[in-house]
Image (cartoon, rainbow, N blue to C red):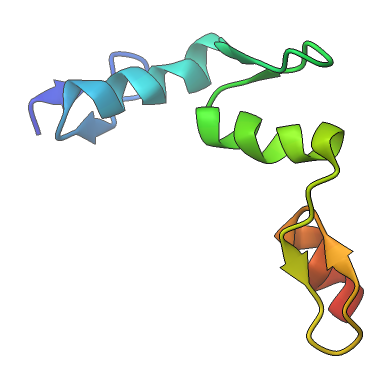
Length: 79
């Protein structure tokens, strides 16, 4: 792979994925929640976090119908 991380030596097939990876080493969190100012490395993590503020609950228990905003909370409910 032509794109190699100078920090850890991990290689990537695209420049974009290398740049995303480098955020792990820099600690940079370019995606910020407008509600609470919490920072995230990935836009997908910000999108998931925003459900905390919106109250949106996408995941429902098939057994009892209770809804959850995160799949992890639904999984914990099943345990």
